[in-house]
Length: 328
Image (cartoon, rainbow, N blue to C red):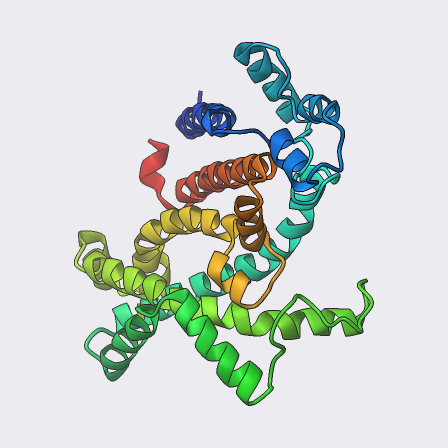
């Protein structure tokens, strides 16, 4: 069998084992906590529900008198069928529908920000690393490193105050204007972009320096390799050497980091979403913790975990294409 296929199958097997371990922890940890979702809902109604209703609620949340092992296999069966249970905070909505609504906004905001910062940062790192000791190399890295040193929430509050409150260039929160009808129309699309611009800009500015410095430092160490010297000796153009030889090898650590950063995308920029009142998964995670919504917390944890594992497997495929050494 081809070595590349064997490599991908080995990695896939590892990720499947990691997913199984994560799902198992996802089941046991909430059940080790005191109380249960049914008791929490019953307490919220403050006597408005009959005592018999708590048994029905426990049955709804899968907390019946069955053994823990039976509950575990029932949980795995529900996961495979896509049934994540009923949300407490958004009762009686299903967890899957609550997560899917927030997931769309998180993928749009944090995903777009990550892709933009990755490509711009990697491109800047390539240019600066190739032209090391230039004026641009002396100015840009410390500037972006200084901006990246600020916490997300601090920069988000500063930009919200200046461009949202003081100068009124951008809205103060939410995903789109209340006077716009959601749908595939120009007014709605422009409203979504207008609302997302400021939080996205915050996330891009903070993460841009990391991608650029990583690419710059790796590229500089790559330029001393023998194959770069050989490419110069063959008379290849500088642009071709920079892109096809130096940058292609130097980008590998950034690709690995990109796969890990996708976990940040689905967990959402928690504080950024809170500050801008953006209805993403980070904001949803906060609400689930405040409401002790165990089914929703489980669903979010599972979504984030599976997405990170899938993203890392896709990164393994990308590394396989970029680095011929992994095919041997």
